[in-house]
Image (cartoon, rainbow, N blue to C red; front, side, top):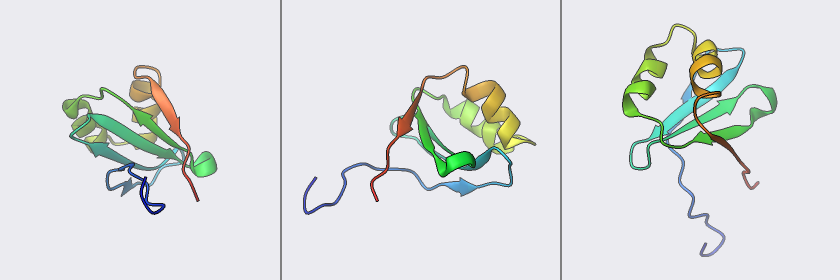
Length: 84
């Protein structure tokens, strides 16, 4: 970190209409899915997330159900502590 600028990089996030998921994004270089949840606006990263599964998420009728049923319990997630 130089001059207080974080070296961390997050993808552009897509807002969605969901009671569970506020927004999501995908880093193609690291195959990481980022999900910001509505409750507490907490951000999680799911590593080794396949590109075809990200496409399925983007096409899901219910993003919240997709994330709850096909992401959270199948991929290890890590809470991302964001600095103010």
